[in-house]
Length: 102
Image (cartoon, rainbow, N blue to C red; front, top):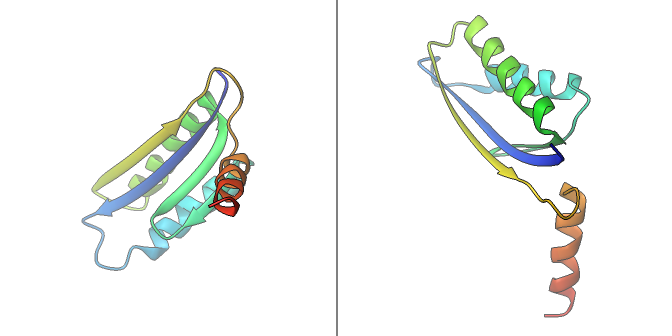
């Protein structure tokens, strides 16, 4: 399958009120994956092949479970195209160009 963009968000449930240390561990795994990513306040965008993204999602869940998290709520949105490979940068640049003409 072609390249995809995934927006992922993990919410460790039953892990207490402060979740930053859990998210930092997941972000470290994303960084170590070598995939292009953008971390933001509500999740992380990751760009790569379908199989790479799925493998990364599995790894992130394992990390959280290994940290003792009893439950995880995960949200994932995928952007897929058949006519060309999507990129996070090109999507943003396209909108910026439109904004210039408004």
